[in-house]
Length: 382
Image (tube, rainbow, N blue to C red; front, side, top):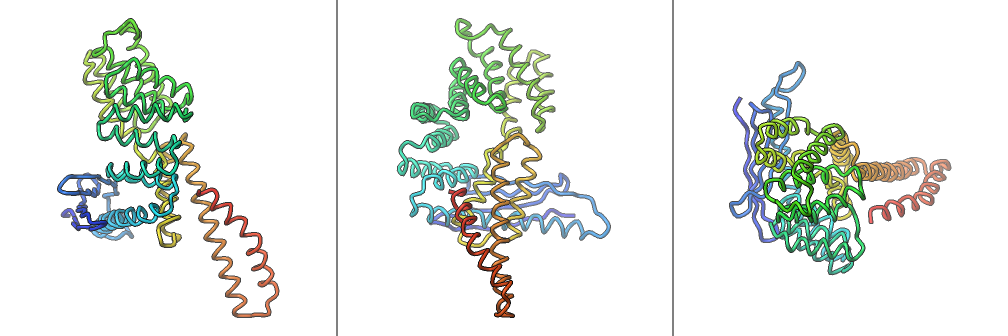
């Protein structure tokens, strides 16, 4: 069968985005690409089953539905992202600016992300979270020195979390300041011994510094750095199964041939594949923004979609606390919707029989006791 494709322009906030979605039946994938001013901004990929099965629609029908859904959902996401931006701007709620900024950052709309993080910082000048995220945005722009200043300021303000030290280490690694990068990655791992991404980047520091940094007066000898890199990679292969085995094997082959450059490039080029953005709880943030500011009710189908995405992410990354926290919030929202549904059903019962005392009692109990649940949910989401 022929591949299926869609093209559309989306105009929001005096800007135009071009959305292009197409299938690749031979590979069993669908890809949606977002362009602005002729430059690709982001890509979204899906895999699908290519085999035909009895009782299923035709392969062409299934692929058309997959491609069409991906295309339409991307359009809706872009429109809603900018609608939420306008609402959040009026509220002066720093955590919402940070969450929205991360969604922009995920979609490579970096200037929009920086705008949100700076708004958050203007509302809460001591926000270490906003400083940390500003640093991340500037790393994406290749502005590592600026990024370092934000991370250092966050640490000075007492925001001493593992990810801040990791991000400072990453900016230093990008600037080839290996000794300082090593110290910050080690501090991140000291704070969080299970910080797999910090271990991964520390392995890169050890390998890259062998060929680029000869300052053995502060760094361990090359043989020790090689040994420590191999230990970290072996630990990651044992503890972290998110497709790392194949990468580790390629790195080992390159190192066995003394091709240090290839080994380093393999690690750098595959970093985002091993540690995809969803790990940073972006699914949960997306859900939060849509629930709080989306301007439309999160129906059962949309909530189920979020639950499925979170469950799949947890299946791949079982040891990420943020994902479990987000899944708990989704389940609370499901409880809320069932709670509201129950109220409407008691109302319907009373509409049919106004003298039905049991239904009236149940309604009053739910209204009185349920208020505390709704207040609790609102507090959790703040």
